[in-house]
Amino acid sequence: MLGCAGMADLCQALQQRLGVPVIDGVGAAVKLAEGLVALGLGTSKLGDYAAPLSKPYAGLAAPYSPR
Image (tube, rainbow, N blue to C red; front, top):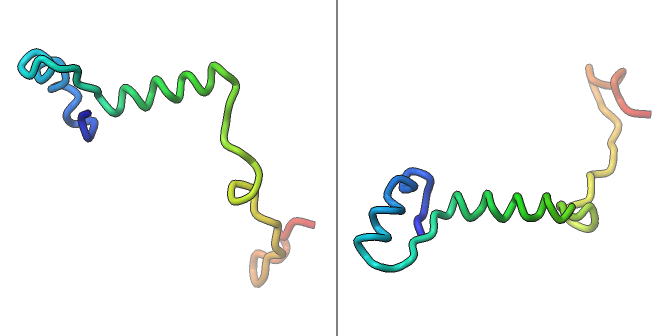
């Protein structure tokens, strides 16, 4: 498993030299994200991932406070 995008060019050469599968972490992450999108999955909107509660603005920003 390669550790960063800077090593992506080494993937094929290392695989041939070592004779074992070498995984490019960036490529694997992109494929995982593509799969999640294809399944219609996303980040939870509950618990720690919920949107923060609105707060009134103070000072110069007070006129822009959500009501």
